[in-house]
Length: 218
Image (cartoon, rainbow, N blue to C red):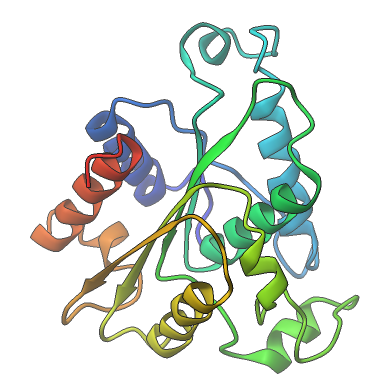
């Protein structure tokens, strides 16, 4: 797993921010074994709260205060980051963000990680709730209350996680969630190719699709 400070992810987030003309906040979260799960969820929730705290223009970062539209937050992640994004939005749908004027408009999941290696995940999460832990196997009630109006999911055809991702979208559709779900399949591509093969035409297409999704141009 790469750091948010890695060259690959810094480049990807910068490219998306430039393409969509938005401010991107890349989150560095705790990793096993020094920080077992749920540190990744807790750290990411704290980061989302930090962003939302700027909603009245009085947050700690002047750039976000002056230029960000906190009424249109988008939460995104690939692989494990997609799993974390889902868990955050399920929490937002349950308890809200807690900051007046701050709202998550959309969620973007790229090749999300759900239910591949249950035993390994449970080992890394000592406080797990068993094989059906909703953070690994999203519960229908969590899908139904996802705290945003629009969701975009990317699935890579040759990804070992394709089946789990496909099932996730199917369960999402059946959950009764009232928002709009969009799905883009990357034909002939493998897991998270867009980060490392950033000049690939399909990787470019992912960035453009994210930008159009953010601006609701799909």
